[in-house]
Amino acid sequence: MPRRVLHDRFFKQAKAEGYLARSAYKLIEIDDRKRLLRKGDRVLDLGCAPGSWLQVAGERVGPSGAVIGIDLQAVTHPMPAHIRHAVMDAFTADPGVLTGEAGGMFDVVLSDMAPNTTGAGDHFRSYHLCRRVIELLPGLLRIGGNLAMKVFEGEKYPELLRHVGRRFREVKGFKPRACRDVSSEIYVIGHGYTGEPVSAGPGGQTTS
Ligand SMILES: C[S@@+](CC[C@H](N)C(=O)[O-])C[C@H]1O[C@@H](n2cnc3c(N)ncnc32)[C@H](O)[C@@H]1O
Image (tube, rainbow, N blue to C red; front, side, top):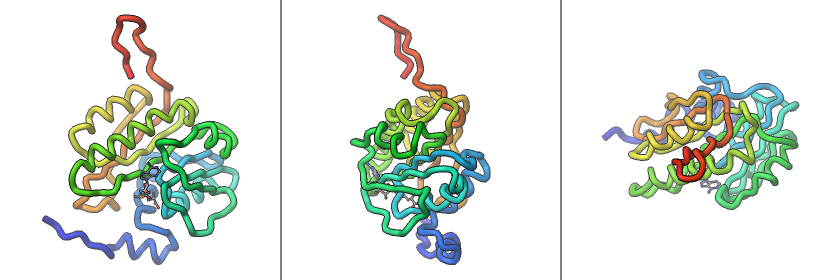
């Protein structure tokens, strides 16, 4: 089994370039390759601490945009005025409060949320976090908006792709190079939110 290298090149690069965590390079690569963020966008960052995705998203949307982050942990690093954050649990977060803070529905929802890893059941807890993100989308994301969401790969991954696929014009899994070799994490990228799928009605199968 490969040894986990703690101070790898991304860690060193993050320190040199002033990012709060090496995960900054995951979002940089995701956005360079998948084109999620635009100048002036409103972005929600779920699981934002310590704050490197806030930094990257803040740079990409610029001061005419807004980045709102929530996490169970506080972000302690000072941020520019268009980046705001709060200690909040995604399971109790109120979409109306978040869109109110941003001044409207979000153009992009990011989730780098991860459960505390215990070695057992991590995939299921990660899947559960992703289902919560999907549940929140109707109150958060504008039609046509984009999503990038982390999940630990496992048996529910194909089901997750199907759930996202029903709500976006296009869905793909993407593993940035900054993901550690030993990590099972992958990002589900959705382009073009279409809203909640319409159910088949009484007696029919719902498509959610
Ligand atoms: C990998 S870290 C995020 C790193 C961040 N993207 C960055 O670049 O600085 C995952 C975060 O998810 C948060 N998290 C886990 N469960 C959460 C929940 N239910 N609500 C909000 N945040 C959660 C954790 O507290 C943790 O800070």
